[in-house]
Image (tube, rainbow, N blue to C red; front, side, top):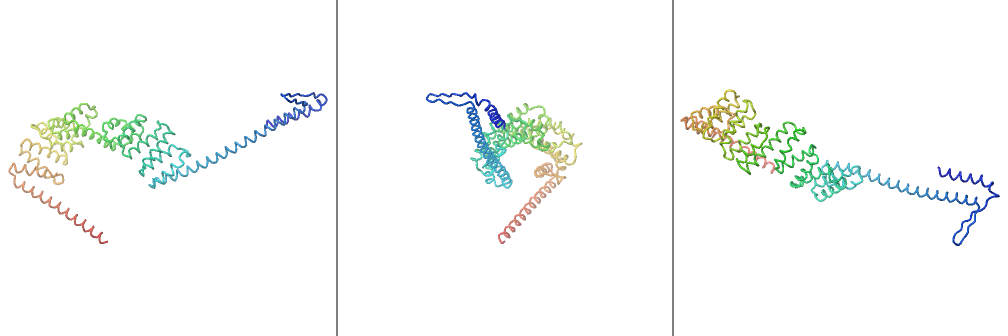
Length: 424
């Protein structure tokens, strides 16, 4: 607009000044090496205006051409973007349907033209891995890394998940270690770390992140307690297998106060000390733990079960504690306490008291255990109560025969069903 106005003003100036200069035009000399050009002033102005008009027309044509090219490029880009979005949606649907091969092709085909190409490459990698194509899965991850850089959390999470699916536990362990440095409070990182550490039996590494997991509230109290107990069992088994009872005792001394107050760990340690044949250390810890437990504690049955395994020369202190505990116990726990006392009396060769304890045990038919009848029969024979021992032996035989009959009936029913299926 401004240029057209400028040209109009120049022409208007020429029309006005032309008559005035008609008799006083003079001339303009343009001299080159071989030629001289003589022009009047008016002719020069008109030539200048025409030249400017030609320049402006050429500029307009060029600008129009490039604008058209840009519009064409934009149209193709929009078309590719719309197509990529459509294919991405179809690919995600195929993933939900379980058709991972088709999903990979749809999501990865125009990934670079989608709104979020990084996410497309990640999903394509996951789809490729799901149908066992490790090569393409790694290729898509490399393309995602090139776009996002090495510090992109989403890409590294996907890489770690795929390494886990490929069962490359050492590489997955290294990858999740890096993720914990990058984002140690991220719930997805923590869940992945739990899964990888449990599969690779890296219980110490898992134990180190338990406080972070607890503070993140990513598990319910019941789920976290189960995870914590799995870790503690893993740590105890690892130390026992590598260093024996001395290692277990040294490990216990190094634990923080919170773990020393954990009765589940105490009972687990007692169990493993007995497994290592260190009954004296297990006995001392059992006495200490029994003093700490309330009469209604949920850990009483587990501790009493370990007491039946103890074999020490002098168990008088433990017997006194159990006798005192008997006055404040319920029926269920009372049976467990009588059982523990019975085994301790037998190992002290006090069969009279052992017989009284086992009479209380066998009186609770619904709470009796297989080994109880064998031990009770032995005790009753030692104190001369052979009729009672014979009665228990007969009951044990009838119970065994009843179990065999039930098994036989089940096998017959199973064979009948198989024959009917063959006939059909």
